[in-house]
Length: 379
Image (cartoon, rainbow, N blue to C red; front, side, top):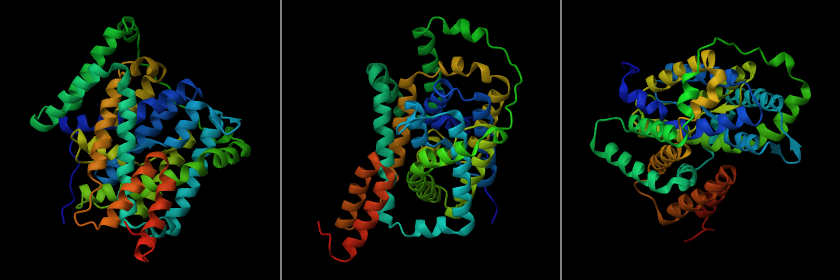
């Protein structure tokens, strides 16, 4: 069978930006709050996106790990103040965990225990959580957001013009109008080559231990549900000619965290919401991931000191529109053509839990499904 080739066209390029709604807010938090090196972050994302596009040949996303990112935004994990070294240590621990799960085959065996109604519920809940976060990001400029959302939906339904291009242009114009000094700040940007330092020698064992305990382990259930089970299901549903396995995804999760932590970057994973966003805005091959990866590499190498200024071109309400539509695309995909009533209940109830906590949702879906099979659960 002839392997599908990656494409590099305007549609793929537009789809490449379909995951900005999760990438930008978390990167801004890491850089502004924990003072992490933006060159390290962008070189980590750029290289791994290129690798994912070449290896999977689908718009396979690379995202910040959300539970760890949320801790970075609040700058605390429990009663302990986080440091950038702890975040890098969490990346090392995450790499070890996922390489172990992949190499031993445990990732696949554990995923096989999750029944299909629970899996569909996790995907639906993740979609709802993306939509809710998108609505929150649009709320401060609801009138403009509603107009952009309506126009984007019309373009997606009836036009060959890439809707993402319109969103990015509209967002940039709005940013320049809202921030009169932005144009002058952009004019001052000049390329300057800068490479990050190798981060591992500077880590203490305490950084790795605390990063594992406070960040990597609490993230594990979310990664298992979203970045292993859900992304595998989403990829294989959308691209049955280019299937992936839990074994491959676990290994690539481990490898990308090895690379990122070595550079001094952040813990990363694959996520079903990211793929939904890429696909919603036109991506169909790994060319989207590769083009985005090249762009992020260039930004990291030559414009890392200007990241904060460049990100001002993407107002939160535009990112909210992107995130809302990515969530809708993901939720729509969580369908079963012939569900029984009890299975529909499990899907919906699991989705409700997944909006709050994916790990709890997986456990609930597993227990509810097997309880229904034993006649203990009737609706």
